Image (cartoon, rainbow, N blue to C red; front, top):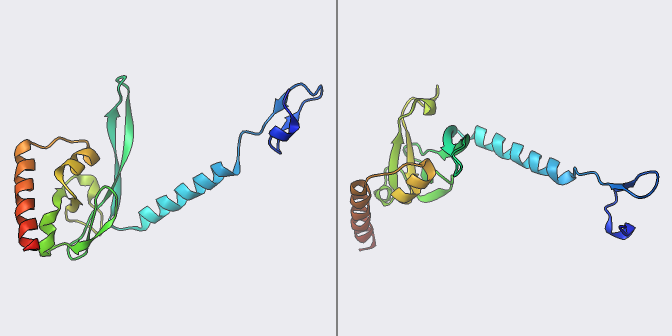
Length: 158
């Protein structure tokens, strides 16, 4: 038998006192749901945010849709990491732009009435882009970017 002191306050005993039922729902569920709603509303209010679903396959061969969250950066604004949404200290169009791996997303679902241009996505390196978009880049693209990145970094620190 359970000692009553170890049971939650909402535990209920049946008529014979042998079985205990505990309400499985908690206020934490509603708090988490409310938090997710606030995050979703915040993201929707951000004009540089968009999301899409891609088909993913797990280890067992089952396929399911996974939602991908993306933040773009308009010209003249602070560079924003496409996978995290964190704003960097550098602006688009500055000499520091070449420190980042930039991709233009030309897919149809990224265009809105306000934004007719392809969205510019900035990553810290090509490998971050590969992880975020679940794509593979050629080693030539990666090597060229790493060489350019080292040259720009050397020029900026000199």
